[in-house]
Length: 323
Image (cartoon, rainbow, N blue to C red; front, top):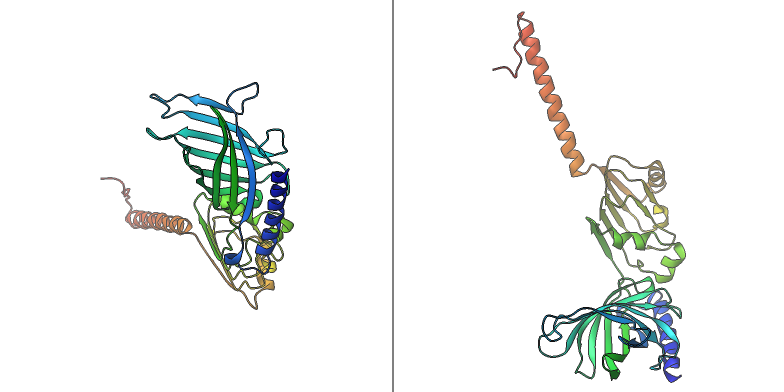
C-alpha cells in the first residue's frame, strides 16, 4: 500500500509540474515528472507475459525476448495494475549478462492513462541499479526525454520483478520550428490538436518562427492563444489547401507563401491584417523550373514557326529536323 500511495503522489506531482511548466515557470526551471511502478517479467507459468523468440547461436548471446509485462503500483503481482511494458530485450553481450532493452511504457490508469513513455538502454543485470534513457513518448509525454532507474527486486530465473523510477523532463519550449521532407508526424499532431489540448500543454508559448517545406502538409490551423508570440511563417507548397487562424496570432508581422494557389480565406485574413503584416507570395523552385521549361519550349516553337515562315515565303519549305 505504501508503494501505491507513492505512485499516486508521483502522479499528483507530475500534474502540478505540467501546469506550472505551462504557466509562469520558465522551461529551464521546471522540475521532472516522476513515475514509480513495478514490472513483472514472467516467462513461465499459465499466463506468461514474455516469450523468447530467438535463441542465440552460442550461449545466451543473441537471445531475444518479446514482452508485454504488467506494471503494478506495488511489488506484489496482485496489487493495482497501472500499465504495460511492451517491447523486447536482446542479450547483447558475449561476456557479461547485459541486455539491450527497447520498450514502450503504456499507462492505463491515473491522469496519464493513454499516454506512454519510450525507454531504450543497456540493462547490466549484475549491477544493483541500472540507468536507461527516456527517448520519447505519446500523449502527455510527447517529445519527452529523461531517464529510468532500473532495479531488480526479485529473481526466480527466468522470471523477475523489477522496480522502475521514471523521470520525465517537461516538453521543451520551442522558439523556432523548421520542418521539411517527410517529418509531418512532428507537425501535424502539434498544430492540429484541439484548442483545449494545446492551451493546456502550451507547447508553443515561445514559438516565433514556423518554416514548412513538406509536400504532405497542406493544412495548418492555429487556435486562439496557442502561439501568442509567432512573428513569421514561411510555407512552401505547390497548392495550399487551408491556412486558418492567422488572426489568432497577435505578433505575426511577416508571412511568406510559395506556391501556385492561395485560398480565398487566407487572402481575406491577409487583408484584415495588412496594417501590421508584410506579405510576400512567390513560386517554388520546381514551379520556376517548370515555367522556365515552358518558356523555352514556347521559344523553340516560335523559332520553328519563324523558320517555316521564312522558307515558305520563297515558295519552298525545309523542315528544321531534316538533314
